[in-house]
Length: 83
Image (tube, rainbow, N blue to C red; front, side):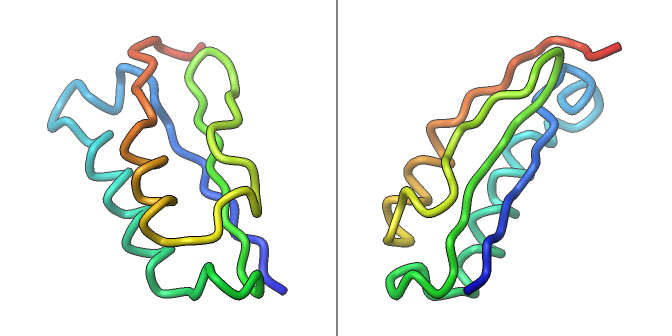
């Protein structure tokens, strides 16, 4: 069993220069697609942070790549800076 937890920076500093937040979400979807989420041998989740930490997708809560991709697409950016 593999638990794969993605941690993504959603602060405004990620967006200042070249709008990297969408690229980070694409990276998460790409890396997760390498694994088979259907057989529960690999469980994935996503946490985002800016001024606070937020559990976006609990590890093991999604069992299909399509559902995981949709959940990742739904993650919004916080646009706050952390100190």
